[in-house]
Image 1: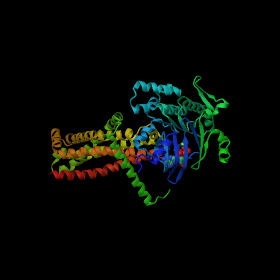
Image 2: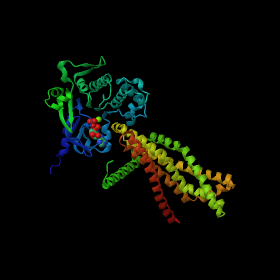
Image 3: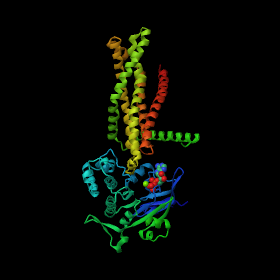
Image 4: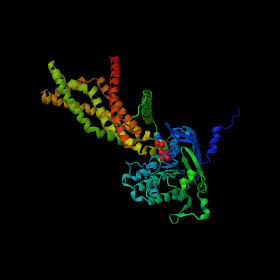
Length: 280
Length: 261
Ligand SMILES: Nc1ncnc2c1ncn2[C@@H]1O[C@H](COP(=O)(O)OP(=O)(O)O)[C@@H](O)[C@H]1O
Ligand SMILES: [Mg+2]
């Protein structure tokens, strides 16, 4: 018996560690409701993948699966080279510290001030001095331009401000992956643009990989066609010849299946009727 | 309304019990694991212990009061009215103190815990906490369980004492008995076994209150309405469990003590 031969699963693990997130033949059902039916996709490092689908298509479920908050009925998931679907609880908590998530309704801790919401992860991890925490909180709140809300409670903020605080909370520990669940959902167009600008800023300043659930196609198109100009502290359109500088892809879910997974160019030239209708 | 088959119903209930036992077990297991949330535990102890003080004092006092009133009637018939202190002390310390304090705190805190964790659950704050790398079992459940179990001991002692005070008011003001004698009989009537029985129950009840509250909170579904439902169910289940456990524990302790004699 060859002693040194690696087991098949460890070979797979090495291959999967190249990507930020890998879904392999994942299925998920809630009782009779088959939400995801054997889906597979990958998110490369530095890539942003926008996920589309009608309400109830399973977009939020994909993000929760990636975090290990729920378990799939079948299939395997790797995140940052770790197999989420096989990880014991304790290590799952370790892995989650390298991922930031912005929930659909922000999910801020409503009994904690903005400052403590944002600092939550640093306080919990320990090992950071109060001065350092204070400085980091100020830094990320400045990033989302909400430094003045430090001592307010989440209930005192508007929907858009809550989203921005949720983004600040997600990025404070400089995660390698960000998961955004409908960050512009239910917001007016102006506020939505501010949020998208933040996502572009986060992507281009910190070079994180991300999954972006959204129902607004234009958000994803803006992300694909803009970059963040750090000197001007503003988002700017990319010159036409350098559109491929940003790594942006699109994934469309329909009835539990991935019916499209590709870049903006492929999407614009898709022949599928449902997709044509979706993007028009 | 949808009809549910009896086997489905039984399966659901057994699953729920299993899930509850898992939560209860882990909440205790976490006591020995890091990180320990001392600050959260103290905060809960303050909220549960100090917050319940007024209601526990009132319940204890009036229970002792009416118990002495009712008991006096019977005792007088046998010409042993002086034993009133004995009667109040034994019943307060062994039964009424622990059970009534347990039920009161269940009404106040099982509901409080269920509604707090329930609203956190339905607004995804629990998921957010897990996403931020913190285990809600350690951060939310264990501190509540420890704090409630611990504080219920003190609340019960206070309730026992207030019951005796209530009894003494009846004895001295209404029955015109000697105050010193009342307290002396009350004090002398208590032996080690009574005190042990009276102090073993509260931490068990405290554990039930907090773990049931957390269970219903964390498993609540369906928005604010779901939270309301969870709150009511938590109080009902905790109260019933307290009464059941009381019967079992009383019987077990009696067997244990009988073995010593
Ligand atoms: N915890 C749950 N229990 C039962 N059903 C759920 C649960 N979470 C989600 N679902 C169902 O799964 C489907 C997909 O949900 P979700 O992923 O939130 O969709 P989306 O985010 O695309 O709107 C929906 O039909 C929803 O009702
Ligand atoms: Mg959703």
